[in-house]
View 1 (cartoon, rainbow, N blue to C red):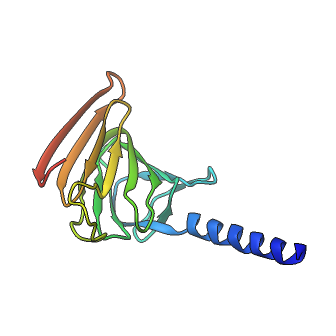
View 2: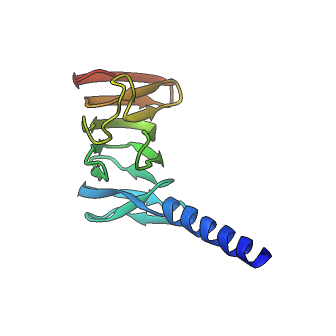
Length: 159
């Protein structure tokens, strides 16, 4: 009985680890210099075709940007001198991305999750001074950590 309980616990733990280690975003365009701090703390250059997991931080330098595509087909452009963190991006719940500094433009797919309620958000973008819930939206967020100022421009949809 104890052996069965231990095996069940190990299988559950392994499943949780695999879910946490899944790739959630891919770099599809990289211009200039960008670095990724992986969840294990290792810092590596960002290259086109590279996959990222939850917990990854991406930073761009001057005259650089990275375009990501997420597993739900949503896209994000991280602008020059910017930094973001992919906090969470689960399969069936809204993703959470933190804009640490700089500029982030995102186009979030409308119907990936087929939610019952139209009021539910598909993605949350956080900064130190704001949190935005979005779904089916093309928008841009800017955050300046020097004065803690967050600005938002919506091109299509609602935030």
